[in-house]
Picture 1 (cartoon, helix red, strand yellow):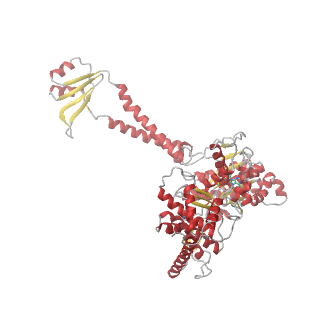
Picture 2: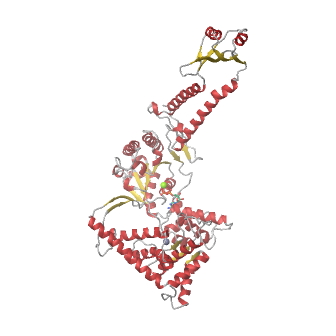
Length: 638
Ligand code: ADP
Ligand code: MG
Ligand code: ZN
């Protein structure tokens, strides 16, 4: 097999290397095309036959017999043939059609007239039309179908004709120029990777000291925390080539291709050592083998995974090839991958803390023109839980908003709006919410706000709005943490439930009737109550123990498996406890709002008028309500 030499062209970040591979004949794309072509050709002839009228070819002498017997109904005299119908019926009861090739016969016309046959002479047969209808149109049709199919296959991974060619992307090490300067908020991970960089820079030296490098380093962490970025930065820092492939790219249409790609990747990498092989989204191929989780594509995945294990075992780490991989689902990885000598070193790339977020924001606002009032620390404070990718997105959104508003620089207001867009979705300005519904939503949000400012542990209200945003949110109350929290006490959880019930209770008190608007609030409140009982052991009735066994994906937070390990009787008691918690919270919220009803009304009125209230405005309204009238006594009005 001819091998195309590896070409390393620095100006292009991505170089695709395609090498022909030995593989079963049926998998060869060209063979596949030929089969396709033959099928189409057969189809085409069928098409032709269907279009062409079936005529029986008869000898000219026979035609003359028919003619003399007066059995020819009508006919067409062509340049080279005569065709027409007889007065005899065929088996299906239709007039028999015939075709015959005549000799030069000048008497024919006369003879036809003599026997009273209707005839037409068509010397210049419309060959052009026949050609178009009979050949060109079907051909066009075939090519259209072909094009459609290849495009469909194309989106399914790889171009139709490229299926057999394996690609591994090669990133020129210093071309994208990503280094640790582009990554922030993951200092521990950077420190751990420092060693890998040292090794890649000088594998021999490292060896002489007797150091053994891990072959595989696995970066684990939630999506968007910068795992891919870190891997590129390691290559950039070490100045070595970076072979990157994503787990999902391995999974191809035909069995065996994934494994061949793995082989290919390692062959290329060995030639270029020292270098980094980066397998992104390792979980796509590295799932537990024989697991029940995947439907279809299992064999292919397992073959690919086996090949990967073989390659990792087979190469000599001292040559300076390091395999980095990333995943956000370490719990589903095959145990064989994590064994010693494979991905035995795991580095956690976690969500950034306050300082980390600030530094990430610094990186992503480097190229922006920031107004002097922008305080990145404040923005970082307002974005707990957001990861690097969100923050990059945030900076970008803010810049777009500033440009849309024709500003010279990006201001705090742009960032504020961008944060809300990312957290709650974009504003829906043209919402057809009627006056009455708006009135109800205003009461609902005022209810949340009032409870939030009344309960002891709540975080300060930052903003209340009744402008609908995103999917399904008609209004929202935004609270902001003063500092980052890692634990929640029982009191805090109870207060959270109370705040969630605030909207519903405000509706009850103001309208005497409730709406569907509280559905999500109730769901979340119930979930908190259930977890208090089942997971945090916070129910005095059931005691400090847990109920049910849940396997939760550590980074995605989704429940992988749930197992019930208690009796039906206990289940009833759990339900009763959850209900008790919610009912108690409900009673408490009715009391809170009932006692401060005038404040609720004022908040609602202000919300209806202005649509959005800032935290300061909320505080003002509450202070004003306390001044006027007898300090928010109950029953100022019903
Ligand atoms: P992951 O692979 O963990 O899902 P990525 O590395 O693909 O996340 O991150 C996507 C983008 O988000 C990056 O290209 C970068 O712009 C930004 N980003 C993510 N994490 C960080 C970080 N820690 N520092 C700076 N930028 C980050
Ligand atoms: Mg990634
Ligand atoms: Zn609500």
